[in-house]
Length: 323
Ligand code: F6P
Image (tube, rainbow, N blue to C red; front, side, top):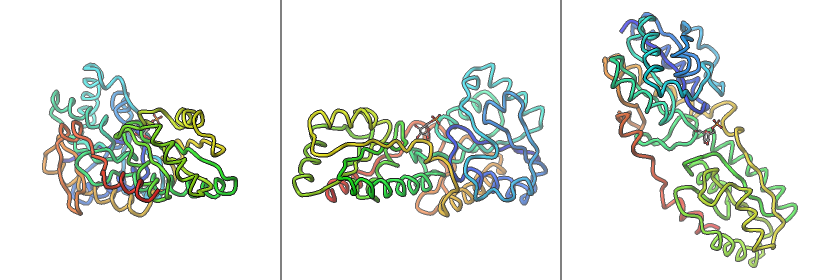
């Protein structure tokens, strides 16, 4: 392959830049003549936002959050016309293969595109949610859980000072991985995740019990997509039936997506970026590269989209045992 493209898509994740850097430098070292970056994901592919990249263009970005290529969630790419326009632009620029860094929406797009056109795409899992099947960890997850952990540690200090109950909402529209990890790491009394049904009465019982055992403050970590609602809604439901604590709510929101990636995310992103290029240069595509038990594995886009990473029930139990 003489020319390949790389883009980032969906929710940005810390470590995406480290991955772009690895893709560009690996490709050039392995003899690819030109690497182009596509700005704003599939939207930029349709709008012809292609930029030439060289080794220098990815200098000094490994430590940066966000994505220098920017990101988007494109509705137009879901249409046949949009994908046709994207194909014409890829052809016009002589792109022979593409590395797509993103989550399941990104891979769903790549899969449909590859059914219609013969340009191979290799995916790299980049999302703070860690919900992708086919990799132990996604790029950005480690950073997000550490940001959430640090924020909750701070909240714990003030919660204790005022004998308060805090509901802390973390990201995860469909997945509770950030909530679970950060909740365990901060000694939360309860963690509420979309993958398991939330029983408000049981939560109240736990809080009452802890209160009776002289716990003066409490933390409940809520994944934004929990089936019982967001942190504000759940706090209200609990307050109606239990007034043992003064209650406060904090929503961490997009703070979890920004800032410098952790060491783990930088290394994972570099490793997967290299792997993606090596696979693409074999002339193959239609799959994501992930890291499972330290080795690089391919998972077809179809599987990566269809299956979701499962919540480990042992971790959920851990919260209850230690509460
Ligand atoms: O997919 C990553 C993620 O951060 C989710 O955890 C969250 O629900 C969503 O993106 C937020 O998306 P947006 O930035 O478009 O509001």
